[in-house]
Figure: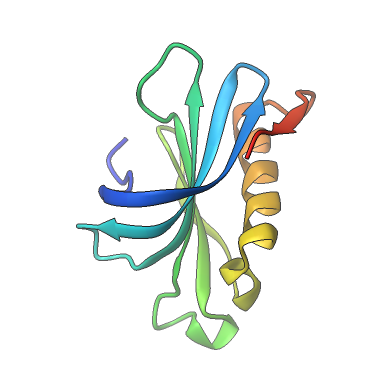
Length: 118
């Protein structure tokens, strides 16, 4: 996954179990990336050490800033794309709900139960 976030440090804000995946929403992200992250959802398959998918709320690109402060970007082996730009992605709960929904869509986990752990 070429465009995965280069996270140096981050603090977990929420944790979920989604079928056989664990999901963690990270805040206070320090990264070597050119992106300024507000939140990152990392989804890790059971038995793996590395996330298979990220959903990121990052500072919007200059050409999209009129639509909102944050880009919502999905990063996986199959896709790396900004799917929306809006101010609302700066809110932890709004981001978490949408990021989980997107992750379930991309990975085909729509039928799996989402359990909030933290």
